[in-house]
Image (cartoon, rainbow, N blue to C red; front, side):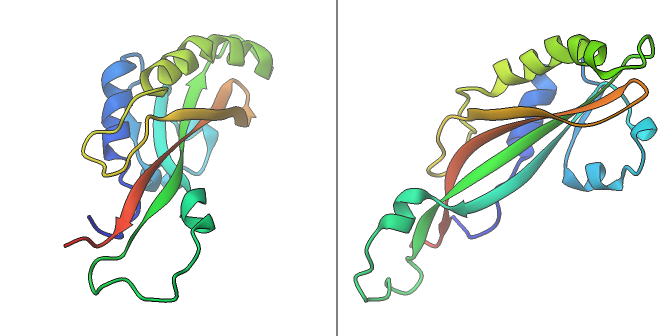
Length: 158
């Protein structure tokens, strides 16, 4: 166990393996490198950590006033992960039909992740879906994000 941020690699692998229609599934660095909607290789997905924070149970735990033994401090961290989907449909110039065309892909991503437990993550909980929303749209390219939550432990143990 360490205090490194949550690793999305298992989630990228899960979505790539379960949602075959996606050309590729990549991470935050690749998503950040795209500067225009037309540059997405649709349909494709991106997995990003959008929020990592102390889990609510750790926030409520009263302090004993003593430090944890050296090298043994750990705490639960809640994590929100977004799966951003880029889909394109040249037949339409408005967003609603593009959303309709994206629905099967959105559904497949949700089905692959809701209730799934990331392997090898200490203290992980099955993923829960939180929300879905349109991020951007331009002349047939739609960016849709679904946000999921889980938790893991950070800190050191002997």
